[in-house]
Length: 216
Image 1 (tube, rainbow, N blue to C red):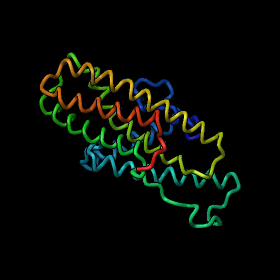
Image 2: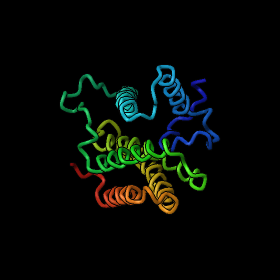
Image 3: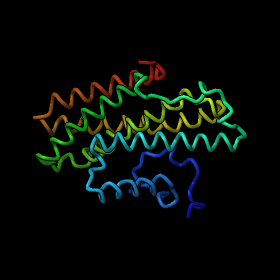
């Protein structure tokens, strides 16, 4: 089965697996389904902030291991590199990631409220996009900033990785803004919260276009 996985497909993936024709050939789809199932079997909510952040930490660690393996395949012995060249990356050291996390946190609070009160049928499709991308934007931003200090790959490979990640982030921004604008009209009780979320997305987009590598 592993031989059928398409390499690098996740670089351009927004994880809308139910809409994807390549999901059976995608390692990310398989691993994500296993991760969600494991949480449910443990009685955990896979979308709870603490659970999600722990998953994100594990994903960063797995990515680091993948990078080490790729380095070895290119003849780079990480163990022989000076210790200072192998450093952990704190995504919160970047302004762009902090904005993504701020949006995620605010959005999750609104989602919890709306789940309790019920979702109007008139915004069900938009709400689905809003829920989906509120976690994806911060996860993909984490992936983006983790590549800024990556010295293991040449410029061409880093550019391919970065462009793929940016493509997904921009799609998420576009659909999230469209969803929130529709929700703004249909959810008057949450008007101020939705305006605030749109403002955070606007600030994130401004930062992305102005200087996505700016340190916090």
